[in-house]
Amino acid sequence: MSNSSSPHLAVFLEQQNIPDQLKQLLMQVAKSCDSISSAVNRGALDNILGSAGSGNIQGETQQKLDILSNDILLEDNVASGLLAGMASEEMDTIYPIPDNLPKGKYLLLFDPLDGSSNIDVNVSIGTIFSILETTMGKSVTEDDFLQAGQQQVVAGYALYGPQTILTFTTGSGVHMFTLDPKTRDFILTKSNVLIPEDTKEFAINMSNMRHWDEPVKRYVDECLAGKEGPRAKDFNMRWIASMVADVHRVLTRGGIFMYPWDKRDPSKPGKLRLLYEANPMSFLVEQAGGLSINGKETILSIKPSQLHERVSVILGSKNEVSRVHEYHLDR
Ligand SMILES: O=P(O)(O)OC[C@H]1O[C@](O)(COP(=O)(O)O)[C@@H](O)[C@@H]1O
Ligand SMILES: [Mg+2]
Ligand SMILES: [Mg+2]
Image (cartoon, rainbow, N blue to C red):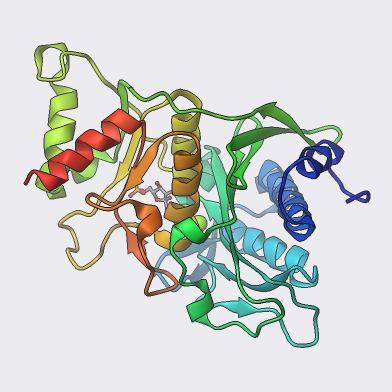
């Protein structure tokens, strides 16, 4: 850990009760996020904004920065000897570590750049990552990645906003580090983050209202009714359209974030992806005292059946998420 590019982060990790290889992997991921942050900061100066002219397996247009961020994570981590494989929103299938390279026991899953629609308009975006364990040196298949979220050993994100903030949990609280742009060191700026149990702020894409399921509609209708309604208080609404930035706000000051299943395409469980969006964010939220459900079940208990599986997401302040949960059980 002595050659680390972020000495403060290295010192913090030294004090954590986790395996050395996991500490090294986190340092490596932090370095990738630093490089992605630099690329994001340069944007049009390096002609890396705009569409790449390709699509991913989920039928979404890839931006140049989606692909660049994916490449940075792959290149930085492939030869580390810490991983058995990787998986990403931007790759159709898993990426096993090639046989000519040293292998480790961890699996790294990521959404290399979350909030694609915000890249070109200079609004906050980020990288979301999840780390799972497998058998040391194993040649991995997709099945090895299909673990419930409660099996994660690390989850985190880097938010590229007015500041670059790295947030992660290793299973003992949530910690936030701000990137010093001069020294490129991640400095601990918030530890043991706790989400307030109550909130007056909700986040949902209201343009989908006519497609929502009854329990979600009931919850939002009651928020909108304000002081005069059954909740007897006024609510505020925020929707950044980058899950990473919306969840960062929830972790910072509370709130409820929802991207629920809706009737636009009933066969689709939701928009967000379970393995590299919902699971890592749910681990962080639960570690910060909040809750994360798909309606009736906790997200971390879901056993995935596909790499790019989607899921309905309702997460944040405990008392609000519990209420939405009750509305789902009540129907
Ligand atoms: O444009 P919509 O439907 O409001 O969707 C916004 C959601 O889509 C996402 O951008 C999906 O992530 P990607 O950009 O990684 O595909 C989330 O970050 C965000 O919460
Ligand atoms: Mg995303
Ligand atoms: Mg993405």
